Image (cartoon, rainbow, N blue to C red; front, side):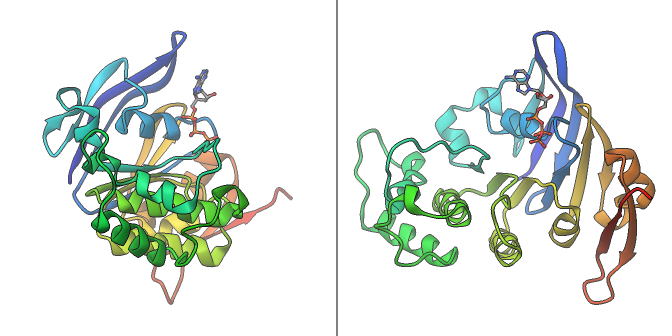
Length: 255
Ligand SMILES: Nc1ncnc2c1ncn2[C@@H]1O[C@H](COP(=O)(O)OP(=O)(O)OP(=O)(O)O)[C@@H](O)[C@H]1O
């Protein structure tokens, strides 16, 4: 599914949080959104997955203006792994993953055998087979992240939005999470802080600063020492890793 963002602005108390953002996200590409804390990454994602409504501009899913789509129609095409999932109740893992099936159901329709099969399959995909009856509250931060990914995968949508999904994950699971989402060949939009992981897995990068797009392109072109200094005010050395062929970034502390 292709996503088109046209001239999006978002304000809070007259302060511009996003200014005139336009981007085209081709079907099945993985687009990384990078930028300093507070640059507007989550706000942009929330406008796309409709938790926030932009003050101006339009967003299209495969040419359909999202203003003309019901929330249920949107949730059949876009699933989300957000930063704060805030499950206050003591849900079981299977209950959380089955929530991903909700957009596919009619009001008050029970989960059926196919929903349970999908739930078990996605838990297996994220390495949590057998965890169905565990209480979410008893799981580690990394395990919880993987349950939330499983719920998003159970939703079975052509587009997946991830807001810093690799928080809490050790390096093995950071890479495993990226491998899993890439394997599904979805349109992926991912806010991510780790430029090395972004360089390894993202086809293209959108860089935000102060609510504006300040860079766009493939990681190899975008991630130069000059650009990293401009974006984060940090010195870095960048080389192309011989094995991966991708940029590898080393940060240099101030002398
Ligand atoms: N409800 C709100 N009220 C006031 N300011 C807000 C609100 N929501 C977001 N902001 C501000 O908007 C700006 C962008 O926030 P956003 O969460 O989109 O940034 P981000 O790039 O995702 O940051 P981070 O990397 O720290 O997660 C920040 O300055 C934030 O303080």
